[in-house]
Image 1 (spheres, rainbow, N blue to C red):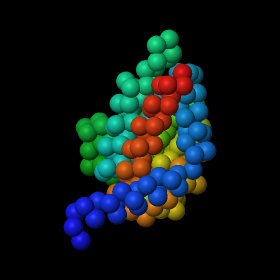
Image 2 (cartoon, helix red, strand yellow):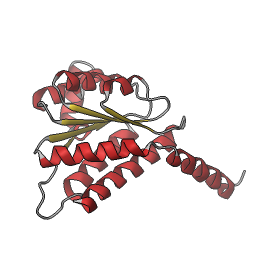
Image 3 (cartoon, helix red, strand yellow):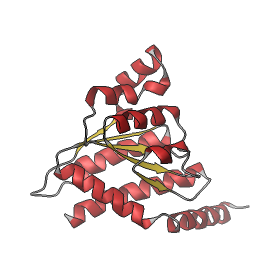
Image 4 (cartoon, one colour):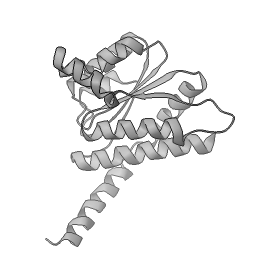
Length: 187
């Protein structure tokens, strides 16, 4: 197969996955984000690997790209971005604790925790979501496959209908961009 044929096949598969994204979940997430911003609540975003990059990107887009004159700004933190804390918790306890321990210092009732995990089964994500629920934070998930164990721990879970990690990660970034732009334009 040549490169052009491969790219065409990849793009067609991605289009199909994007068409299957539940639009109502997008709207629910946008409302939760706007409410957190308007109430001055913090938003914490987390993920591993490619999803860590998406978490970082989302924090940047919400913290800078979604600024609307006359509106409150997002108080947003990307948990994978603090390398020192991340590696200290991983080294001294377990990688399973890298997000929950950071949240344990900061999380308050009513804050918003966004978990990005292609599989929905990352132990460190699940542990952080469990803590968030105990603290009465709102939990949001972006995932794929069948949603994994994460879907039961999220108040809102947007599942990309795909079994390709790459296409799931592509779709999460598209959803993240659309959320940031929508929140900025609707305000």
